[in-house]
Structure formats: C-alpha cells, structure tokens
Length: 233
Ligand code: SF4
Image 1 (tube, rainbow, N blue to C red):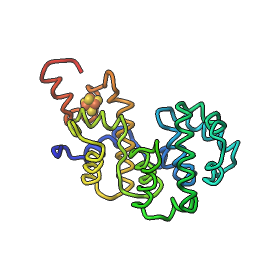
Image 2: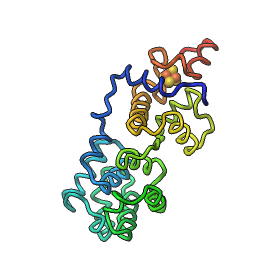
Image 3: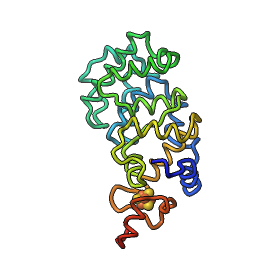
C-alpha cells in the first residue's frame, strides 16, 4: 500500500483535469447551507443523483422554510416528509433518518450543536442515527467542520482497488491511510477526495475504464497486469 506517492498521484490528476476546488459542489454547499441542511442533503444524496437530491431539498425548503430547522423536522409528519423527498428515492428510509437526526440534535440543543460541539462528540451522536454511515459523517466533517478526514465512496474504492491501494482494506483502514499519507491539510484532503471521484466517473469507470489515456496508468497495478498479460485495457 505504501509504494505509491499519493500526493504526486493527486497532483497528477489535478493537473490533468485542471481541477479547481473552489468550484466544486461540496465546497459551494458548505458555504451556502447550514450544518443541519448539509447533513440533510447528504442523506438525500445517498444512492441518487445530485439533481434529484437538490430537488428534494428544494421541496423541503418550500414546505418548511429556509433554513431548515431541526425543531420543525423533528415533529413533522413522517408520511408528508417522505412524500416531499420521494424524488430522491428510498424516501421512507431517508425520511426516517432525517427525523431521527433532527430529534437527536434537538436533544442536544438544536442546530448550534453541530457548529460548536467537539468533533468526537458529534461523531458519537451521528453514529447513533440509523441511516447515517461513516462516509456521510466524514463528508460532513471534512467539508463543514474543516476536520481532516477522508470519505471513501464507491468510485474512490474502485480506483484504489485497481491501483493496488486497497485490496481487502476496510473503510476505516483506507481512510486512515489517506489521512496519514496526505496529512492534516483539509483543502488537500478535499481536493484528493473530489479529484479521485471525478477520475472514477470520467476515466476509471466501473466498466470499460479508459486505461490507455489514463494519466496515472504507469502506477496502476490493474493496467500493468493487463499489459503484461497482453490483454486490451
Ligand atoms: S489505468 Fe485504468 S484501472 Fe488504472 S487508474 Fe487508470 S483508468 Fe483506472
């Protein structure tokens, strides 16, 4: 796992895609949304597109006002909430998670808790909310609380696996590896997270990855193995 220089690899991808952190969706949302809204959108975004998650959030704003308040959602009608976010898919489960999050926050004093409580306390609270996984919590911490962590999504896991970085690695182990290699600079961690996702969508796709034109193919175990065995990539 330590043979690849992760910083160099990230820099290569950033140069190749001319990637700019400021223009990315998570950075924009971190500026525009409250902590609670950011978490609600993270829940709405699970297993669906950004467009549909945004649409569901707009439905919530139209019905409950902006900014969304935990006090309001903690006591809303679950069926109505599910209907409002139906467009994002898995809406009953997501509605349950949002209400559970709102009630947990309410028990800690409301939205303010997410802004000021120590990260370790917030992590414990969020882990107790059914439907909020480690990745969602890490996205919130990295983009909204400036905390040095590294969310691993399905694209990053696939890219890492092909590079030879993550075979049989647990989420926690892979996250620790990234933070150790990249250090505590949150902007570098954000950049690495987002550019790897972009790479997984644009080039290192699940089927038919475009290995011949990939800027990091000389470091990729998948590519080198296939080239050695004479298979097309
Ligand atoms: S060489 Fe292929 S498999 Fe390896 S990172 Fe690039 S696109 Fe993915």
